Image 1 (cartoon, rainbow, N blue to C red):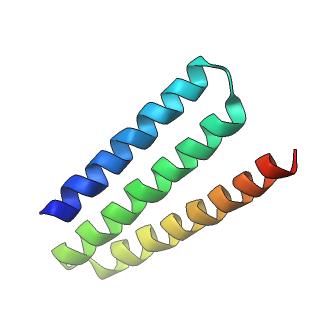
Image 2: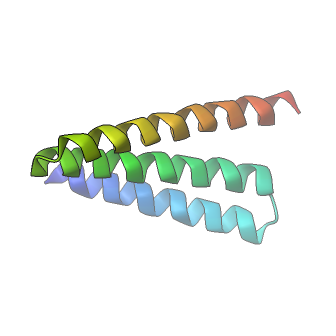
Length: 82
């Protein structure tokens, strides 16, 4: 139960951070925080689907989460290089 709360708080925090950067018109960091939010939401869905016994959907969400994590790392490297 605590893991759900921590994951929910992390998703809410990343959404708030992305909204902050959108308002500040800092689009690179807004994209980075949205990618982190997508990573966290897909990871939590993968766990939820696995607990429900939906193996194919869980695997799909896991791969989507890994894709967004790789995109987050790529975006972070891009930001650091500029």
